[in-house]
Image (cartoon, rainbow over all chains, first blue to last red; front, side, top):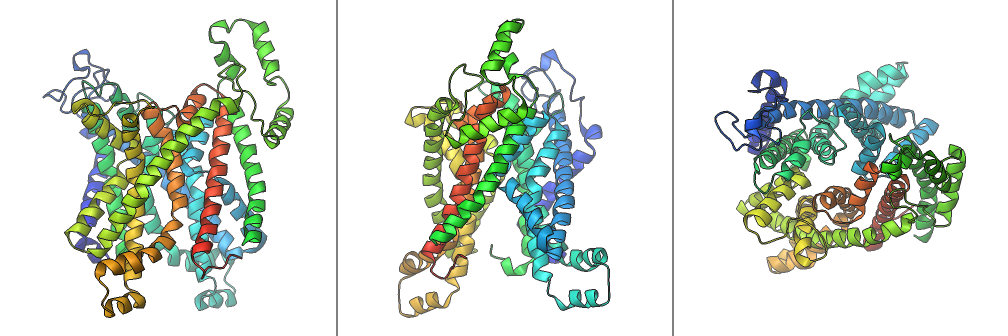
Length: 274
Length: 308
């Protein structure tokens, strides 16, 4: 599978981009050449120079440093949302799919209510209630996304429900919790990994969108979405902030999407053409 | 099929009632006081504040407010806007609905043919340079967020080349960039699906039969394969439309277009609860109806599908 992934040049490019973004995020405090909150009057809307490699923003803060720290914010947000959505979604989906009956009905009606909203609009509504900030962005995106994961998990479990090895486990008197963790979960993990890989790009985009709209991550914490919003103010004369942050955001999401597509093709050769 | 449609509508009612309930409490739970926002400079005037509070029913218990809201919805009354004094929510929304619908329709009208043409061409020229170029463009379009795409297009066409206006609404030139920004990601999404459905169809026996009887490749693709590609593709319209609805929030804010999306964001910052609720409800109902319509359409054009 790994070998198949490495033969796919697009997936390799995606993996490379993702690796760079993760490295920047992990080592942001070391790599950022300047303090991302430090204002510098001489650097206000400065073009790229020896002092500010990618220029300065409206307060003269170093754009490169803010982009690097922004990568960290983006990765933290996306990682947390993934962890929460999968923890809730997989648990709910497995219980609903395996146990069936009234538990299934109730859990699925709950997902219906969330899925009735277009995802981003639901997230905007929740963020508006919780107030802006990284924490509420993570919470609102998690609330918007877990029902999709629960539905996917449920359908995967239903497909396994009548496999002989599950009947055998039940016949041996294995407790339900152990069946779910040891027999069901390992069989649905590949499909879940693919779903996660494809979802990361969308989560990064959603976080940036909320921040762009002004209801996401707040100043002075840099978020690529917020930086693009700031950059639009100076677009006419000093486009560096807007353009560099747009490139950083676009390339990062592209990297995640290329890797996600590659993983899907590698894990499931039957959908090679899709 | 009629009974199926009726049952789907009936199931929608309790879900929408919960949606209304959630939206009502969500807006009430938002931080900030709408009366304070309304008064702005006169915030020290307590008499005026309590009079406004009474006029908008905000002095009554929450349960009563909720009951009043539900009853109003049943009679089509969405209440009064907080931000525009004495103006009904319906009046505030009226012009925005027209603007957003125009924008979404333009975007869809561009995205569907563009996406289908791109996807079909890629499938027919599979693994050749046309396919690779189209697929690379499409994954790029899906990956770049709409506001980043808009930033590039505005910088290029409005600021550097001076051929299109930066923002605004009302002229044809002003509609070009927002329509493109909405349509390109949608077209890319449709195109990727169209390609995979087309490849699936091209493997079928009846295509081989058509080729065996000597039909030209163009006639096979346009006459036989395309129709059968459109069937599964039509189900994706619901997802595309949901995406467009969400994207209007960003695109209308960015291009300063007086539609529902910008109105919703402005209303969140202006604590205009009734307007936020109305827009979220409107989008949710719209989204539900589109999805229902798609399911019915799917059954109508593919006789193999039985709705139960």
